[in-house]
Image 1 (cartoon, helix red, strand yellow):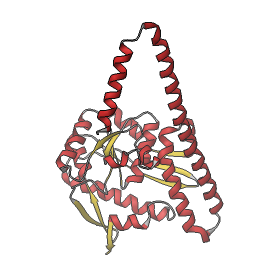
Image 2: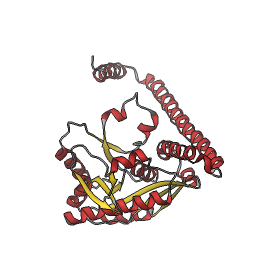
Image 3: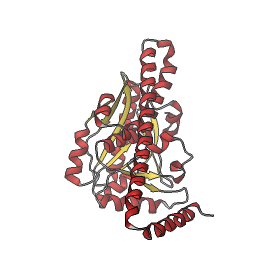
Image 4: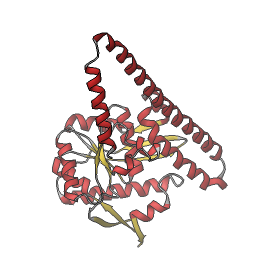
Length: 299
């Protein structure tokens, strides 16, 4: 049996029963509903506290390892865990708590671009960057939507994976979804004044752009940049890192893409920002496994 269909039948029967109850019974129903809402809010509060406590534990561990060069690999693993829990913490936590942990550089460029163009595309080299930057924007009251695979939002999936997209509208896609349909869905939302966040290391069916930067052969994808060009909205590069146990979010300037040649220029700019990031943050994300995915062998 289809669980959604069964759930609809149950709710339909309940609605019919409630409709035939006498008026004096309605306050009792309202009290039950209020109790359920309080219970749900407590569950959300417990999740937020859980993420906050785990985040603080990992920050404390990173502080202890900071003065120990021999434990560099361990510190890198701890920082990755910090970023993972930050995904779930940022959308849940009040802004005043988030500001104590996050250092947003250039976030005013995002709000300015939205006021000027109506919508923007927030794009990172990979998912960790764009997820964290978009989660901070959602925390500050700026809605975003993104591409999402249905299995990533399943109930059985781990909690932090689901909370990455808390407050964001998910455009569900599968490996069988035509690439043109994906771009069309994104284009419609941008033209409707909605913000989109994505990353340039993968959309299903997208052609890979290969280019060399500082002796490395990058393999990136430019579908989201093409959509921004067609919609006439700017692209804002973003990145994230851990420094001194703070989450540093970097929001780049709004870049207008008017020609296909400018698409590759933006990709090169994102690649250069990653190389500079890797030089300055040797213990932070991304891992070497990810590096092998985005570029080929050293030329």
